[in-house]
Length: 62
Image (cartoon, rainbow, N blue to C red; front, side):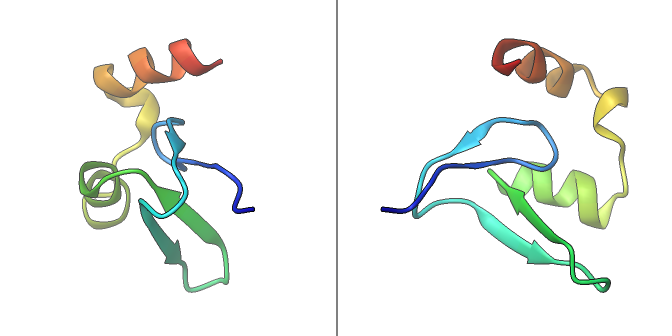
């Protein structure tokens, strides 16, 4: 049975069979729930604590 992963950027849970797995140059594995999280993290280099929409999602999960 596949397990649910957690988005490395916003902290939202990712259902099995969805999302995107990114393997960094150092071998770290990052999971993203959407292209929005992927682009903000990898392409734009933003920090999740600086964005208002991420803070709201993180508070609901924790």
